[in-house]
Amino acid sequence: MSAAETRLWPSMTFRDCDAMIAWLRAVGFAEHATYRDEEDPTVVVHAEWVHPGGGGLMFGSPRPGSPVAAPGASSVYLVVQDPDVVFDAAVAAGATVVRAMAEQGYGGCGGDVRDPEGNHWSFGSYQPR
Picture 1 (cartoon, rainbow, N blue to C red):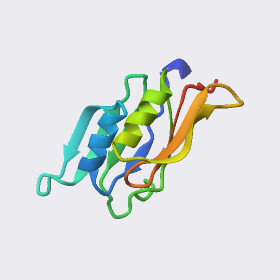
Picture 2 (picture 1 turned 45 degrees about the horizontal axis):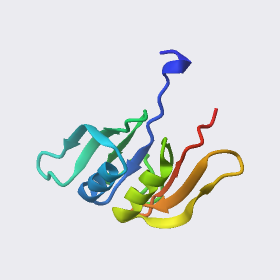
Picture 3 (picture 1 turned 90 degrees about the vertical axis):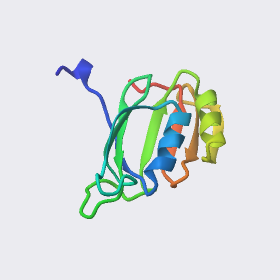
């Protein structure tokens, strides 16, 4: 794989994966794969969800000894063409505004929210190079 093909997939832990799946859909993610515990289907063992702009997110339910950050302790920056639309969808789906959408001095427009589990999300149009 060349550097041009490298993709970043943050990993997160969610207490209520089903509620967060609904929230992820609201901000544009789509299911690629979701694997559940056969004995308890409320437990997500591993999930991969993609974003139409590129990249994706891996997540699952809390597991003892997992190296992934505890629920509510993650932070993600999502670059989108129209961050106002995604920001508004995130808030409508239950996110709490941390920083309202605004033009940024370094370029682009962006804003921050906390998802229903407390994870920090930034939505913006600025693409770091």
